[in-house]
Length: 156
Image (cartoon, rainbow, N blue to C red):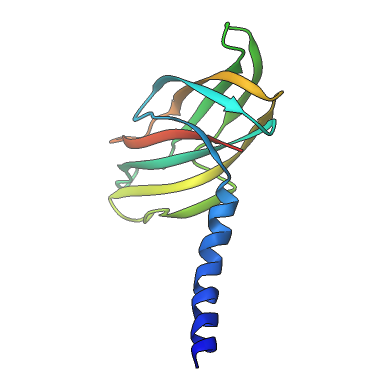
């Protein structure tokens, strides 16, 4: 009975451990709560940097209002002296992988969405120290848009 109990605990714990492994090692967080720019020091040890978003937003979806909302991050790593080493663009609203959160209800008067998600953008750079420059841009703004969190995380 005790062995089965231990096996049950392991079976419950294993998915959490796998989930933590999928997130990778945090290198830096660029805290953004609307359009703007953040600059963060970062030290890369494996060479490949993947980008995640901590996303939370809401906007009106009243009758006749088209659900149009497009946003992106412009991401750049420079050598600390201002020379760009790598650049990419990331879409926070279409992550490859989500941890928790929700996509909201499309037919409600206010659409809410929130998640932590790995975006389909990454860079490969030599190991070493860099400055991470992140600019969050809203390309198409729906009515009543409220951005509660648009932070970007760099992970290995």
